[in-house]
Amino acid sequence: MKYSAFVTRIIPDEGINLLKKNKNIELDLYEHDQVIPRKELLKRVKGKHIILSILTDKIDKEVFDAAGPQLKMIANYAVGFDNIDLVEAKKRGITVTNTPSEMISESVAEHTIALMFALAKRIVETDKFTRAGKYKAWGPQLLLGTDLFKKTIGIIGTGRIGTGVVHRLHDGFGMKVVYNDVKKNPQLEQETGAKFRSLTQLLKESDFVSIHVPLLPSTKHLISTKEFALMKPTAFIINTARGPIIDEKALCKALLKKQIAGAGLDVYECEPLIDCDPNDNLELRKMDNVVLTPHTASATLTTRQEMSKIAAKNILAFVGGKRPPNRIE
Ligand code: DGY
Image (cartoon, rainbow, N blue to C red):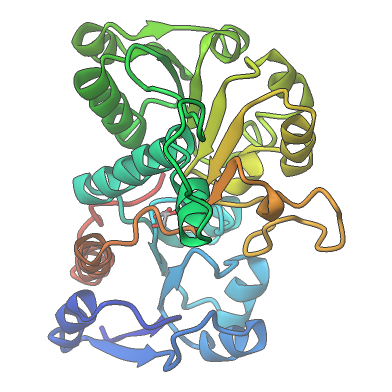
């Protein structure tokens, strides 16, 4: 059988080249390096068997209907799959895959650490200060930061990325580890002395809190007003998972009230908006104790090439009648 596949955005060539070698796949590539407009997406998926989507494409009932009943697979170019209506996909017998790998986990774990350092050592703020010509003399109290050494890291979610973060911080900086997850992680406990805590207790104890859970109905606004009130005024929060896990309005308020010391964010509640309400005064982007990156935690050449290959291999397995290695149940 011949399969027609639509790729919703330019992705690294590695995976595309693998797909091009397969005679049974007819590829239609969106030609622009930008988020495909909704209207165009709905038009281009018509009659396709496979869609290679990215995380900014909302793949829902409307897309499934626009594609037609022959649609059989969504290969998402991302680890997260909150952009896809899995319930509807299941109902229609559509296979959904994602692109997890060791490499992507390592990239995101590194970026998480980078945000922690940027906050603790005030890297962005002090860079701006120095560039602005404000550095006139060394001073004992000049721009004091925070050490990571022997501090407590609270990890919410101990999958591959959370575990990668824990190892780096425990092994490299002697940090004490507390964690929360849907179930205990005996291996992590054994390797790093990590201690399981309720979310409440974790927030009370941690000097840094880092989020590594998927976005699910149960994790939306997992961290909101009540949770920020539990944190130490010296504590930092880092989110490289998905924006809506933190209630961004509550975060702004907690920062303004100095309930917490700072935040490092790679993802946003109303992405790509940094504040959900652009007219709101509580703008994260004005705060010096906030470090913001544009959802680039996995943005290294190696990782993005690998994601491309993984997405393609999922498609090739499917087309070959095999179970795709990263099928989401
Ligand atoms: C993912 O893969 O889910 C990241 O958020 C982007 O690489």
